[in-house]
Image (cartoon, rainbow, N blue to C red; front, side, top):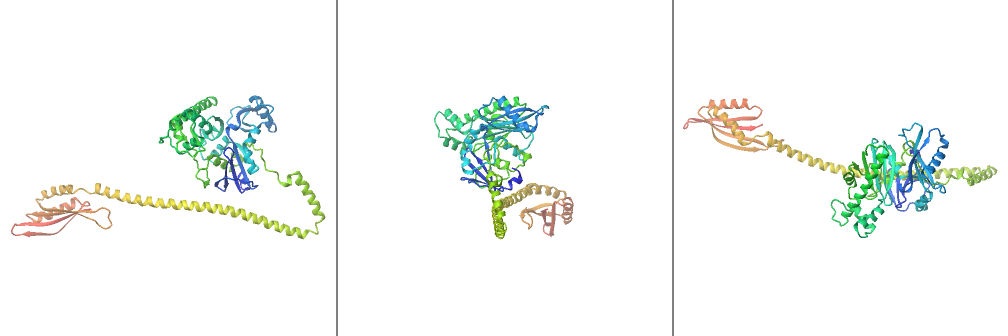
Length: 517
């Protein structure tokens, strides 16, 4: 659905017909609903599981005109695939553009039994009355490339576990290449698990285990047999990938994207890498949608993303037979009624002219009122989204502020430690440095005191040595201070208040203050 088409509906409804789950989107806000209702203002999209159709590829001569293309593909599909001529299958197709055949055009074809489609969507149609688009599920991954959510270089494999189907899909250089359903849906996994375990385990209990137990840490008695089950699954996947690489001339699978309907505690991507030796990731892409639910399965995200694409960016492959009723004016009964009404109107044109003007004004008012209600609904939804974003922003800012404060506190502590360990020598080192210079000038050390004083504006404390000097000459003391001041300029600050003389001992005394800079 192009952007222009998208804006003509009030909301988009995605349907999982196999689980009867419905997700509605207004703007970019998703909401899972339990009881969908018919509305002519909503666009409805759904999908077919890989097990619900046949996929193959055929070649058609480039000389066949476009108007005869469908018949040519239809006839060749019945002949080459041996389809039952008594059944009128629904056949859809997409062209493969990485084709090297100069004479033929290659098409991927998708074939579905109408009765199978009817059985699948019977419950859905009872609720919503029509479905605008039913797409084969493997083609939904095209939207990830169109929106540049994943890189379009290389060969990618998508593995998706569902309750009624598990599929493998391969894209090469952003184009669909291959898909296959494997016999390991959750229902089939449950049956095989019971065989391995040797006892019957309720399906709901099995699903609870897969959802809430991490296979790395659990002590459940189901652990060993579940690991054996996964080994069987990935051995089967490995065989398929080996076949596909050989059949389709693929050098390697660059990455596997793996996911399931369950919000599982076990890391399927890690298990995949260990078992297959191929880089693996979950489907936890940034789809550009917000939701109010804890877990919305990713198939719904893919469907809503697909509806935002233009025709040039998506695969046109629609299996729906549940079309909207044509507009009243295009129905045969509608045309007859309109013709009769026009004749009646002409016959009473003049008497009802004033009434018509009044009615037209009333209709215009109603239309404007409907438009206002629609605009108000969109405005309310948008405001709710903005409030949610603002609330998240406040939480993030609060966390950021706390982290910044902790960072600043740790940084200051580290600076202090660094300053003490690197920039300041120890007390013993200071005494050793200065004692050598005292000997040069024949000055003796009488007393020694050491202290640390915190100076305002500094992180680290200032170390101060007070040296009690004794000499037979005051000139020796002054010469020593002069030497120290020149030698250790920039490292220490030297000061002495006075030099005193004692007659009895005939010696000179002074207290030299040494401060580290």
